[in-house]
Length: 238
Image 1 (cartoon, rainbow, N blue to C red):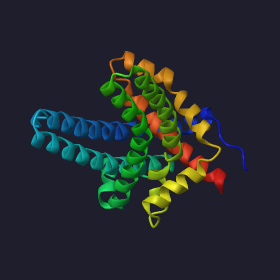
Image 2 (image 1 turned 90 degrees about the vertical axis):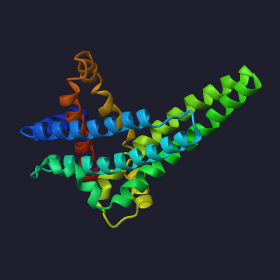
Image 3 (image 1 turned 90 degrees about the horizontal axis):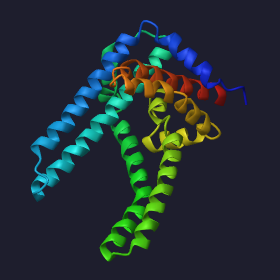
Image 4 (image 1 turned 120 degrees about the vertical axis):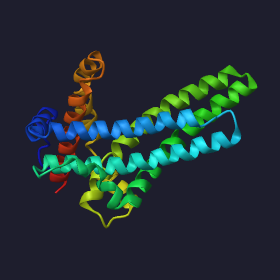
């Protein structure tokens, strides 16, 4: 196995490839966040969750937001792959997932969501049952199970983190195959990705102290670094 680039090297490559492209990346970030956040706020305003029809409508619209998030995630990955491969980029790339393999992007998101929900279900069920029976020992067990499920979810999130990138490299593969492929190529590299993400904590703290304005630069930088990580994993796996 070839030597894997350090987090410092991956971040250096990300900064290098982002020169002259921060404007496109920031516009893409603002467009996606405004659209999804605005839609979520609108859903909360129009849906009366105190009624059964309102509750049903709320969950149906939430599913729509999840679908849109998957399509934007696909386009987002496509944008950053082009940035990190030093290809021409433009803001329309964030809509790439709407017209190229949209069903696979949605299925990837659905599979991931179902897996995360399945991990949380035992803890949630145990906690709810304990509260209903007023057995606080059972509630405590539920809390422990939820904490353990959080660790499992983080592990799965790292394992499946490359699926949307792989979608653009292997467009003929099914969503299930892409998730399996992601888990396979991430064997031995999950901790490296975890360390890369953790290395951004100081910058993220600074961004929050700037009332979130700094996120406009930190988030694209972080996205470029994770795209560089994918390219490095593929190079190492060759």
